[in-house]
Image (cartoon, rainbow, N blue to C red; front, side, top):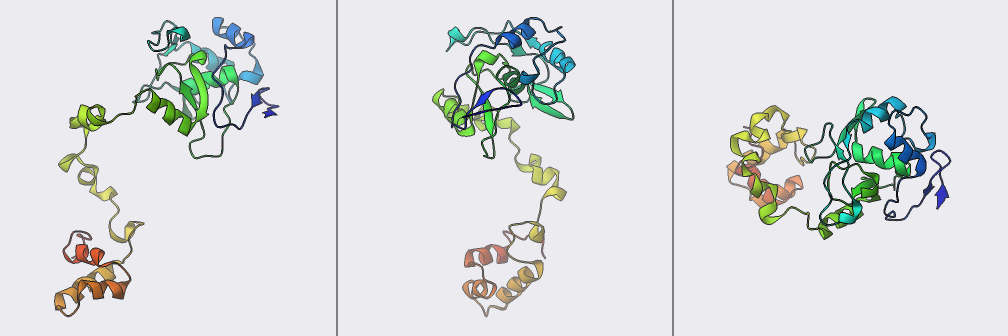
Length: 243
């Protein structure tokens, strides 16, 4: 455990952080009086000005629904500003959008540490309500903790609840697939980073096969690839754009 000199909070490198406590006195006073000009500097997220904070709380409705599975948490504070497709609040800070619930968490509990992983530390919802920004409903944990929390509550989409089943019309297929609507964006042949052969080699493979003097296995051995790849090339299942 160590003390953060910048934010004045105790940080821990543990896998999961403790559930949030009630907001401290200073931050609670600020919430109740969003017109206040004097704000506790040690609790502000980086690059967030007093004006931005006032704009932030102006977009919060504190009379949200009470989580049915955890009524003891009290009503959610609902973000009324712009949201992502999944319902999470967005707030513009500088030239980037940030999650509203993460900003709220940092205002009340200090900066969210990184843990060195790709996803970093998440600000998770105990209320399972994406637009909620109430600090008492938020807790910090690793990406894996967030996944386990979601799974334990049965919020994983699967079977009849999967998006492909619920809204099949939204799935891009056939002529609506990206490869059809924007063929210029598809990386074909050597432009594909996974390509094992060049265009001249593909032409040579097809030429050798057409002679009838070499088996697909012999051709594969010559070019250092497996015969399954050669089979798909000569039958024009792949590299179709090469004549």
